[in-house]
Image (cartoon, rainbow, N blue to C red; front, side, top):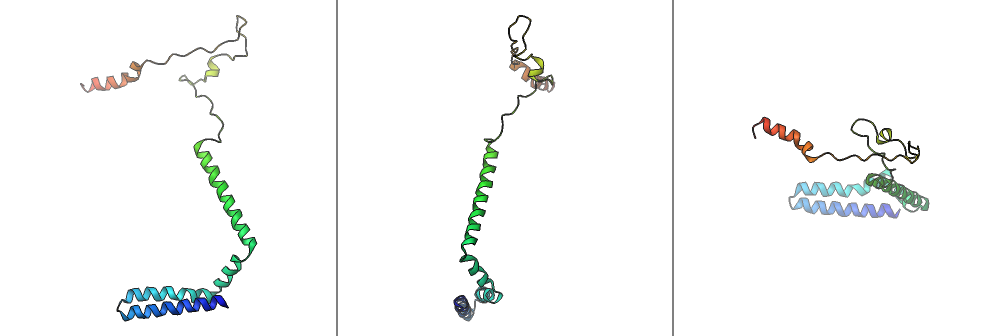
Amino acid sequence: MLAETICSAVSAAGLGIAAVTAYRRRFLAATRIAAYSLVPVALVLTGLVEWVSGIVFRPTVWIGFGLLGVAWLLFTGSRAVERRGLGKAPKPPKAAKGGRSREAVAPTASAPSLGGRPATTPKTTPTAPADDFSDIEAILKKHGI
């Protein structure tokens, strides 16, 4: 009952302002004000005001909204952790250039070698920087630079 009275008063005030605006020959603005002022009465007549007031004053509804908020925080938090890579297992080592992994090339540390000592993995030497630029040098020579 109180909500209907308040909404009717707001609509009446809005229509009064629209009438004054139309009197000043600002018809487009008056039309917009009249449209906005009819919304509260329309909400009362459709029953949405009672529905909203029923939601606002129930504690179980607020608990539900709280749980939705917690679920949203958990979801977004887990996505943020996933994007930073904090929740992932370490990646396995990449395969060597020949297509075989390092484990396939060298014997494992637990297998004894001929000398009775555990086998060690051979150290690979990095390629020289000249090898990396040989393709570029060939392209430059081809174009006469």
